Structure formats: C-alpha cells, structure tokens
Image (cartoon, rainbow, N blue to C red; front, side, top):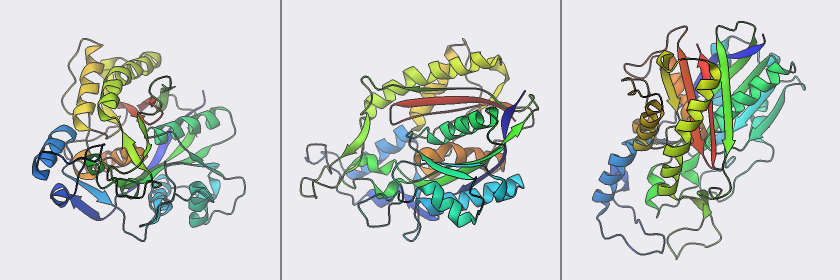
Length: 354
C-alpha cells in the first residue's frame, strides 16, 4: 500500500533573543486605549505563568520569511539525502508573506514557495511551488496535502515548510505581542510502500460559524497610531476554551481511525501556543481514555522560542529528532501524534510511526 513518510527535517531558529524583561518599558494598553492599572513587571510575570514563555527569537532585520524558509529547507534536503531536482512539490505554510523589517505590508508576489525554489536553484519546471494559508496548523496541513499527492500517484517527494516572522505584525501596545516569535521548520515527505512507518491517519477541521474571527487583523490599541495599519489580534479566552474542547476530540478521532492503542503513543508534538493551554489539551485528551498523560509525552519549546505559528511543530520535531531538547528522544517504531490549532479556526492532527 502506498503511503508517505518523513525522510528529513530541518529548522532555522533566529539568533536575536528577546527575553521577557525587554518588555518592562513597553507601553501596554487595553483594547479601548486605556492604561493598565498593573505595573509591567506584574503583567509580564502573569504572562509567563500562563504561557510558559521566558524568551522568544526574532529574525535579523535583513531576513524575511522566505529566507527563514530557505534556510530550513536546505537542512531538510541535506538530512533526507535527496537531489532538490527530484522534488515534485514545494508547499510553504505561512500567514503574512515576506514582511520586511519596518514595513507595513506583506509581500507574496511571487509566492514564498517560488522564492524558496529560486533560492534552492531548482530548474525542473515540474517542481510545483505554492503557498498554504491555514493559520498555525498550516505546516501539518501541508504534510497532509503531500500525503494526498503521493497517494494519488502524482508525487514521490515533497518539501513542506512552515515559516513566519510574526514579530513584524504585532502591536507593541498589545500585551499579546509578547507571545509571538519568528522561525522556520521543514521536512521532506517521500513515498513509501512500507506500512510499518510513516503517516497512519490524519484529520482536518475548520470551525467558522462562530469562531472565524477569533484571530484577526485589527488596529493598534494606541489610538494615536495610524488607524489604517493592522496587526494580529486575538480573543485569547475564546481561543483557549475552543482549543481545550475541540482539539482533544480531534486527536481522539484521528487516533481511533488509526487503530493504534493510546498506550502505544510515545510522543505528542503539539502547536506551541500556550503552555497552560497545551497542558490542558493533553490532560483532556488522555481523560477521554480514562488515563493520565505519561510524563514526558509532550515535548515543549515555547519556553525559549515563543509562538512562531506554522513553524512551531516542524521546529519542535526537528529539535527532538536531533537530540536538542533535554530528556526527549524518538526511537524507531515509536508512534506520535502531531496536532495543531489556529486561525480559521482550524484544527488538524496526524498519527505517525517513526
């Protein structure tokens, strides 16, 4: 039976480190433009307790999303030991395109995938590149689409990338700006006839009846700022409640579809959005099977890297596979769940055997 597996991974973690104390002099405001009654030190401490974020990474001013995507792609290709000319699809998940440092527009002409193909020097015109907008679950969705192309017989090798520079689309007067970061992760997905490894099952959902605008673009909380410039905004409480209810259900659905016993799941690579939210999702997921989550089942990178949207899951996966997260490793034959939630509101998950 034809399926697909990940044969190489790569990530790019920007070098500019911004710790929480860098926000002590920020001028945070409420949505209506009024000032907080709390000191920034208290706001930051509460933020850390909820999200788990201690520091985050920002891209150098000269790098754009497509640059980060290219750096991660190069590593994934090298790790997979393939010729770039053999790649059938380049799928790049992002949300805002190339936002130059100091600019107020995203640039997607040409697409980020086209820019990556150009940087890789691929001359084969049958290597098709396109961008994928699916919120934070974009990279996982790209892997699912790569699987579909392979099962349909129109691809044997796909490059899937998640890259973002969220630091350039945040409102500095919004305390939520402390969540976001920059980064990129990539993988090579290849055809396999070995059903003992690779993607076992997957599922995707979009909730838009009431949830479509939980994440959206909005004006600065500072009423003196240009009202025509928009920034990423979110209804944090609504997203939290949505995620802890719907993500565990989606994970159970995809695991049950796989036929794998919950006790055989060794790792869960979940979108690094908020430590407390991720912990609640995992707790509720295992509760559905009348179990407690095993210790160490959920690797975390948000403490040091923040929320880089589509880049969080592939970056986390690459770090664990390369032994760069303490006390976390994956052995051949291990079963893992990859899951994400984000703007749309979209949810997806994959059951995967290494």
